[in-house]
Length: 305
Image (cartoon, rainbow, N blue to C red; front, side, top):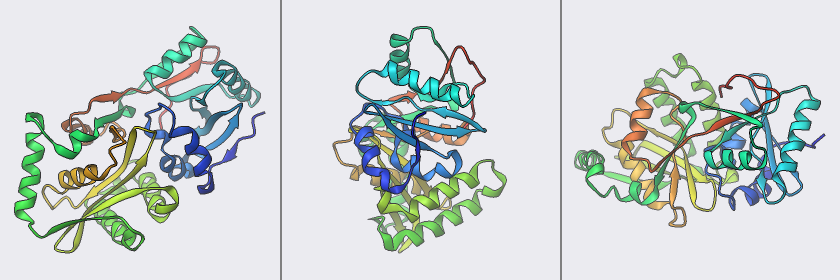
């Protein structure tokens, strides 16, 4: 059996020592996401032969992520298969991108069946596109920002610091009330993950920004690096009565993401029509499709997060 342990805030250094130097682009591998959502997925990790491996629970079943590391990947996959079978679970991995799929097929050809769900694809953008909004395709975004600046000349941007966490929580509560959170499936889980992230902002290694109008908070956002070239934006909330607030906070935060990060991952749309339209409007350079890979000896239906 593999000695898995629950993820804690104290595990940030060991986990990011693997994820930050990898080529994995999934939003799921942000330490903040791993830690903030552990209440729902009971996420655990282990280091096995210099590979970082994760397992978690979805709908009462154990699932895994693709191991991260260098060495004999086939050996590690077989160890995970054995570990799952010893507990009478079928072996499946979630969050398998196209190049991970290719890696699996190369080392274990025709041993896995792959299924995908467009709702869980990640939206990936060039940081420079989001920060500059240059070109005809971004004209509508520039129009929103210019209108915001004209309507609210007394606006300001500030980084999220510990003394500003309370303001962010208050805006989130206001946003939730305006968007009928209590009537939408899954919103309670999102709120719990968001509040945990705000309460542990510095320990998680998050950075973020706040947009003010007349010294009142109207938007906030935050995220953290996923790997050496990919920055993940996990949360973006704005007062929907302030036209252009979303476009403004998006650009202001993107301007402050270090130049090291070529790409920005703004996560999935979860099949929400308005969210999909908004994410597509920012012209992603890639929609990162993610598969579930199940060992063919034990196939099962697509698992819903």
